Length: 140
Image 1: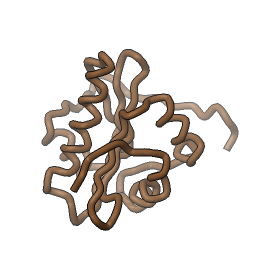
Image 2: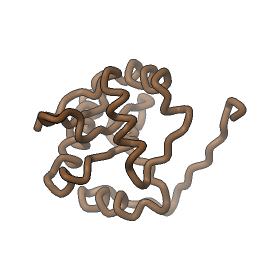
Image 3: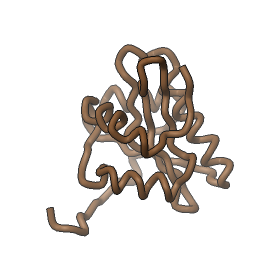
């Protein structure tokens, strides 16, 4: 198992992982073009887990200059519980710290109980004092 940078060349495999995972919401913001822009804007931040069969885990990571953000953490079922998710997160957090980012957030779907359990188990604190509002800028 290796943990390294998630690259645009990984898009098809990563998208299949995200698409097959409960608790991940995909939209037009997850198109190849949009993910390419995200990766280019946040070079080296996102992480991939690979074994002999290919991509077995991925997480998107980036920042706005102030705060870091992690999105779409997925590890294939066969690798869960072996530290792969933690390693993906730690690699991305190290990259964020190297950019001077001192705090990061992760977005979870409210019904994603297993995801919430993972994040809490690796030291993240749920917040009840803030919420998220969204608005589409393009018609659907």
